[in-house]
Length: 276
Image 1: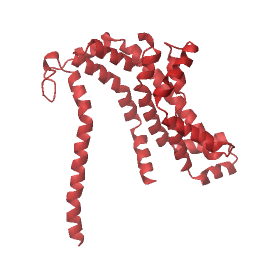
Image 2: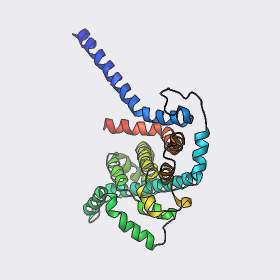
Image 3: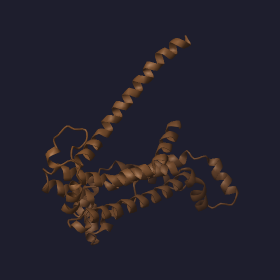
Image 4: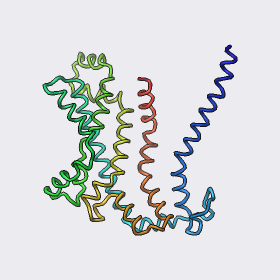
């Protein structure tokens, strides 16, 4: 019986691996096609070769000069980093308050935060625009950052993570005379780095890919983000597939670098979430 069970399980395991390989290829192929096209000459764009016949970096130089790539990338990095940092900070503090303290109206406040996550951005876009315009922050990076200092998604994510943290460790720290601030940053935070890192990557990607809000608030290249630059490039250089793929590749690099740097924490977060 054991031999039969092993014989049956091996084909099933091989089938699962084949399916995972096929799905991985489907996920990676668009990125490969983008990278492959970015190094092709204009005459090789429509060729079906797996690698460029004639490698060239002219597409990257063309895209770099066609739009203020360096300025827009710096703007996007500034907005994404500041926005991600503030959202993580506020979500960690809010989650700690909801899980550690009992106060009047706690359920109502938490319900309101949860409801704001369900409100579409299009509903609050115009009110935010009116406020930002009244403050004189149009064509200003602060106008892009201030409405996104807090993320309801991050608060909910941190709240459910903090609830799973062992209370015995917190009580032991309190018995040692640690304050709430010390418990948060010396006991809880070091043990939840994986979850915080994975949440930070998601927040960074969301901020980096934001398009509608920067399009509404900024109309000058020196204050625009990279996504606005890509849209402008597509409008003016619609048939330049090589430079367009080069510009898209450069826009994808920061996200790829951050993911590779935090890969271990992201995998640990998924593993812990699966074990729970």
